[in-house]
Image (tube, one colour):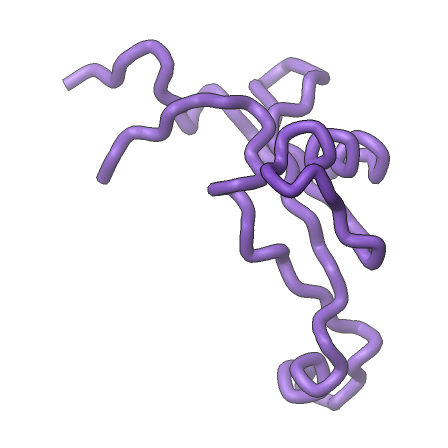
Length: 101
């Protein structure tokens, strides 16, 4: 069965490192809250292969100190980041329907 045209096809897209400002701008433009964490430290972007246009953004943020201590094997809490739990469901910039499972 072929997917409708407006569904994402994983072979057409890739996740790449993206510049901080691009990831932040994407979230500010498309996220329902129109806000981005002030503690964001790193972003990944969703791109159509061979295109520079960012379609989605994943934001990495430092977790709360107790959670970071618990999850680092040597307790070095300053080396821990967590992926914002909203992505890709609410932080996807491009309004594309995903096929239902």
